[in-house]
Image (cartoon, rainbow, N blue to C red):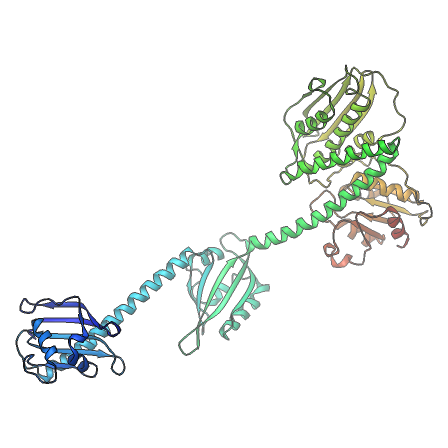
Length: 596
């Protein structure tokens, strides 16, 4: 069109200005400033509110004010056409201005061409801006989807075909990056059959406009592992509110499920543990009373044993299921009783014990050290103690041998009464740890030798030891008579087992066992048949076990559970079995058995 300048301007009506965004031209018309004030061109501005402004001669064309003429001339304009794009009434958006340095007659064709170019340029810019915004939006979504640990996906509402799945979604499902795209059957095949119908039904809810949160299981092709998935399905609607697509967020919640389940197990184990400790304290109090000379002696003995038990718990709770080092245990108990360090020596390698062995040996060493203070090596100035230990092979496994040797002590008369310490060493070590223990008085002081297998085990109390038992008689006067009944006792805690058996014998029953483990019980049942049974559920740690209960039920032997677990741990087929909650009074055990 042989113009001298052409420029684009965006209107800023509220700010009384138009911004010059693009321009080209010759030297005959100087370059436009970055912005112009609309009030400097009052008549021209009013004209563009409704129509295209056409000026053939700035100096002579009617319809513009003197102010308009002066300011246009100052810009170097001789003639101009301002093709303004409007949206609504008196709402100009932007303008394409064609300028001639000299007066010029604009033909209808030229004016129409400028108006068309103005429309097309705006449309192209609008489309480019939309495409840029879309591209930026897609880039942001892509960055979000790639960074998200949750899987993001989009399905077509009609076919349910997967149109998009983020890398995390493919990783969660254990497939290639495009392994979920396409036919919904590709996804559904990964869902376990029992959960497939429910997962598809939640999609129907999203198609109906609802947001659905649901959980289901899949089996990953990559490793064959079963995983729990939590899906959030939601509708994606068009401008008319019709659901065109379904969007979703997939999260692998397997670890969270396991954590919740593990927490429940830990809570049950904690409840069981606390109840067993309370039962152990009760037995400890009863047995301490048998050996005490008076109330003061009883208080001192019981306090020392309770403190030793507390030290065990502190040691074991430093690190879950880690046990403790033998030297640390011995040094702690012996050092607390000795008057000075040169009274004892400790010789042996570093050996880590299982939690259960820590429990038993700590109490055993405490009893030996307490007796050494009262009667032995620590009771006289010239007394000395040597504790040595070593590991050795026995029955193709590692064992521990520990020697406790006192010297410099006047010979004492051996006691005919079996005390708490000797009962613990010679009874509890075989019963709970599957080892051996001997305690004797020799010239110079006490001597003790303990042997036990070195193995891992939970702190409540795993063993396949022989059925050696020592226990006192509990008063069952006026309790129900259990004469003629042959009652099997299955309990892995030495003291609880012993006191239960003593109570049953006191009521006239013949006791089979006690059995500390499942294997020992099954071996006994091969040769003997009880008339009744008392079963602990947590034999050797690791949670409740029901094989013995099912076997007794199959044989028609009535029994009851004596457990620290809550009722919800009992399977449905055994819900009708009587259950006594630990710690339970021994008379209550006798009464419950009498009702079977």
